[in-house]
Amino acid sequence: MLAVRHLHKSIERRPVLKDVSFELRPGMVAGLIGRNGAGKTTLLKTMAGIYDPDAGDVLLEGESVHRQPEIKREIVFLPDNPEALFGYTAEECARLYALIYPRFDRAAFDEMIRRFGLPANRKIRQLSRGMKMLASISLGIATRASYVLLDEPTNGIDPIAKQQVLTLLVEAVSEGMTLLIASHAMGDLERLSDMILMIRQGEVETREIADPARGEAVKLQVVFDGEAPAAWLASPQVIVLEHVGRVYTLLVSREDGDAKLEELRRMRPLVLEELPLGLEDLFVWKHGGRNDEDR
Amino acid sequence: MRIDRALWKREYDQAKWLVWITPLAHFLALGGNRLNDWYLDRPENIQHRLARIHDHWQAYQYGDMELMARISLMTVLFVLALVQTGAERKNGGQEFLLSLPCSRTRIYWTKWLFGIGLLTGSLVLNTALDMAIVAGSPIAEYFRLWYHLDQFVFAWLSLAAVYSFFLFIGTISGSLASQAVFAVLAPVLPYLIAFLVRVAIAIHNDSVFRLPEADFILLFPVRYDYPEMLAAGPFPWIFMAAVFAVASVGGMIAYQRTRAENNGKLVVFPLWERILQAGFVFCSALVGGTFVYAFFNSSSVVLYYVGLVLGAAISAWVIRRLLRLRLKI
Image (cartoon, rainbow over all chains, first blue to last red; front, side):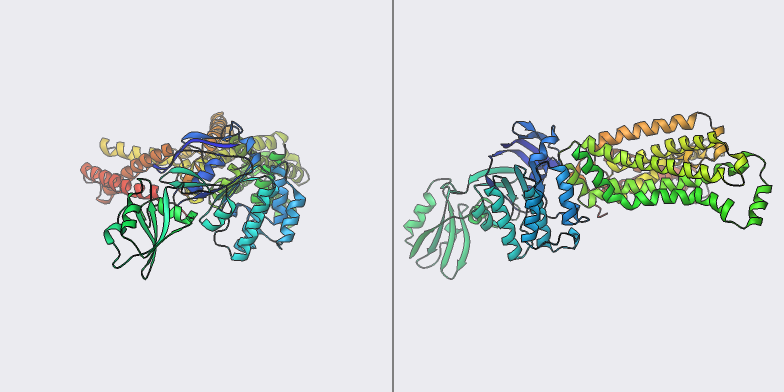
């Protein structure tokens, strides 16, 4: 088990991680979501031992990643851009990784690059962004490390490459790897993940994917009878996700009880329909709608 | 161990061109020059040169070729240190290394050993070549084994110290650009500060100031010719050994505690940020005072203080801005 315990990290005197704790169980997929600059990359880099925590620790089977770096044979960090490998070909990368990770599966790596048509003898620098990510993820998976930390693996790549990346990730999970994926691709995370870690204002909240809102909010489609109630819509418990004509898609918080829902029912709207609440809705709700200050 | 092989491979991969350039540059400055003088030149020129030689000091040109070789090697080692530390902060190499399953101490010592190994290899190869060239040349009668060994040990110690110093600067600097600037400035800083302080004292004492000895420059033994080297006694050896030890261990400690999140800044440690800030303001104040005093024909000591305050104020503003920068190189 990979456990993050009371992690604190400040960068340029700004607290980025505040008392972050969670656990990754073997074989699970966890999605890490948060606004740009919320601290997702900082968390991954601290877990990978690139950054030192100000306080707290990252423990792999009870041993500190920072005090016993040798145990990182079981943890691979894949950045959003594998620029450290730009000077290597895929073939050379494989030779380097085979020296670093004792269980590196060369045959599996060769099979992956063959399947995705990656040129083995071209420098990584010369590949398209999608191919770079495929090469990087193939290397990560071929290490056969127990934990793979991925930073924005599908960011900026075309739909076909993205599908190939997701295929690789699904295969990795089926082989028992544990993945922690930082991404803004909520739909992909919803399909892949068992658990969601939401980072906001330096704190991480953990949610099971089966019930991300835990009944704390409800998503509704509403058509009001007559003029829309501006005061009700502006209340802090209500977030307007979409407004097309007279049709409103709303998120209503139930954290303070069902009072707002009761008020809505008493207005007798023409349509009041509950919709399934997805990860993106949860994200918008937790970040208070479109408030740019809230990171 | 396999991980050591990976670390060595990584160092070699990123600096392989320097592995070839180092012995070549060394050869061109030493053996190549000697070859030119005693084998490739026109026979009458060789005879003319030979006629003026009466002892081994003259035969070895007072160590001028070794001096040039040391300067060439120092330049190459400066670039190597930049590639190993400063450039890595920008190209993702450092983060890759820090994510690997090995200690930071091990990563640092691999880098350091790579540089020291390259220096040692180049010195062994080129000293052997140079000895062979001298032994087979018209100045063979002046061949002195101890001369070559002296030069070898002196070059090794002084350059190992300078390289360790460059690498240490790389472990505290946040970028390639700041590492290059600090590595060039730091060795002359004691000289500059001593000069400015002497100017300040002279202004107040109304006395004529003189320049301090250039030996305040940290890298001075590198530029010694052979007579200077012998005349200097044990001091340069002790000094270089001290720089070598302190810079090597200091680099290791700094690398262990490196703050990768500060990559791109002038320096990565808050403590060194404060030292840089204080040092920059102090030096700029002294420069400001000296400049204003000299500009107005040394008419009043008050002008010195006006310049001092102006220099301090402007530099405090400048350094505050510089410390906020994230450099692209």
